[in-house]
Length: 253
Ligand SMILES: [Zn+2]
Ligand SMILES: [Zn+2]
Figure 1 (tube, rainbow, N blue to C red):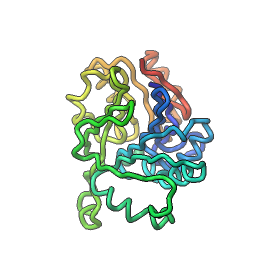
Figure 2: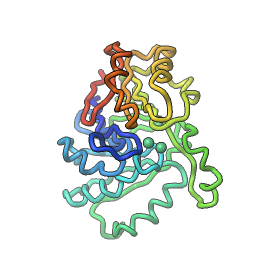
Figure 3: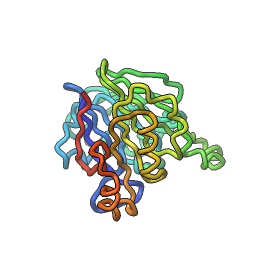
Figure 4: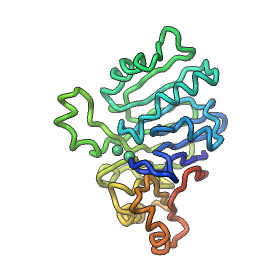
């Protein structure tokens, strides 16, 4: 399994990083985890073969994780796609997405490929082709509950365990408040891909150490961390701790 960090910024737009997107390749299949704004262009820029994408998984609907979805569908359309695509989204969002697509003139009656939305809230573990993944609910959006209720959207936000069949797990935190929801999720995790906007780098490293996770790759890097990245790297010289740049690729064997 090869994972390319196609976008490594936080929610703040910056010149040197694109918003969150993980491009996962397993043999001939590809999968996209999160699609922050501009992901379509970012995949093209990095030369990643988006035509092989079988499924897209959205961890939560903040724009830096989800606003690139429509652009991805347009790119797939304009490049002649005919194969269906499965899109996994948080609960409640599914029906709203079906309402949203016609606003962008994506009409199911004439679109050249089928777009299937699935809710991931109650999904325990799911396999699509060569990828198995398991969403783990976190509290990143819980603070918006009052407003979400009023506007009939959910507050579900997920971290994600994923793997190639028969191999070790990768744990992608996406956006979180802390690591408490991941206490029992790390048994077979080989690498932690952790955000470092809502939690400290130290917290991520401590969690990985405590759980015996051998590699840590930080992403979702906010400007204040980026400004001090060389000083931070000097503090954590262990080669198993890395800070991702756009286009960085890791292999999980
Ligand atoms: Zn984010
Ligand atoms: Zn977020």
